[in-house]
Image 1 (cartoon, rainbow, N blue to C red):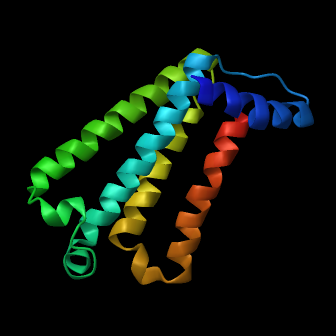
Image 2 (cartoon, rainbow, N blue to C red):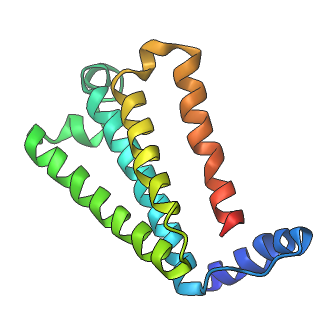
Length: 145
């Protein structure tokens, strides 16, 4: 909780002052937003690792999916379960703030990361731009909140 206070006091506070806005989220909502962002990040990494399994077997043999044989069904049940938790958090926050348009951001981000993990490496610069855009939006979400 002390880390949250420091982050709020030294980073978000001055940004809100600069934009002349108050915090829209209560602390518990902000913590849920951080959890939601972490879930999207984890899902993105997991999907990327899943689709890079053959390459990682040679280049990164210590990766979780390389070291531990997990069936595709179990892997996707974990991914979908985590995505469902994240979507639930997104819906709760959107309903609480009466901004249902926020719920569209979650599946769009997951689909973009999934597309990159599965096919995006073949897109060259365009795939890198897609992932860079997703990463660049994270600080924007925190500032908007």
